[in-house]
Amino acid sequence: MKSREDAWTLLTTYTQEPHLIRHALAVEAAMRGYAERLGEDVELWGATGLLHDFDYERFPTLDDHPFKGSAILRQEGYPEELVVAILGHGNHTGVPRTTAMAHHLFAVDELTGLVMAVAMVKGRDLTAVEAGSVLRKMKDKAFARGVNRQDVVDGADEIGLPLETHIGHVIADLTKVAPALGLSGA
Image (cartoon, rainbow, N blue to C red; front, side, top):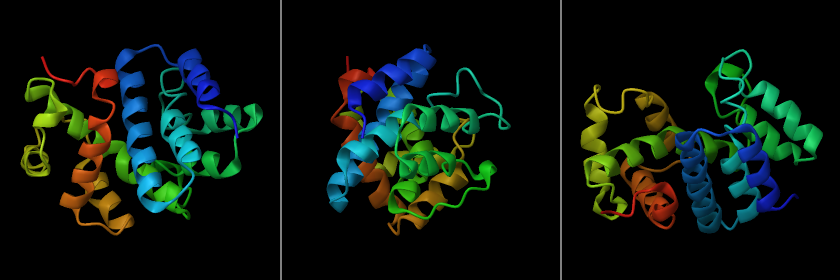
């Protein structure tokens, strides 16, 4: 398994947009949190989260992402489990999610964006975000319009958790890296 530093270098080689880097860091944090809770390989799950969209800035179409990135990951020597989980994080790929890691990647991807958007309106402060406030904002279709609400709901179902519990876990995980996300308050 490659190091986190290797994964970070790959991410930042392909991704320059700060919001995409913050998203990668958020998904990494959520994946690490779930790996810890489940007794899984924290480094592998973290790298999967960090790299899941590394190719998106260069290859943003559904025809290319994450297919081109997966070829790069294989070429770089990343484990097949990581590659397949990344291939399955979007329903458009047709790649089934067959591992706990793949299910959790799908479950946290869209949700991290929603949680971060709620933190933005709460003074850029993740500690001010509660699961109930995320659930309320989820109902407002104009808020964080780019977040696929059905994927958020389906993700919680895939990992077998009530949505409110899942949201609470993701909030806790993102709070641990709030400064890197620019969401540690004023």
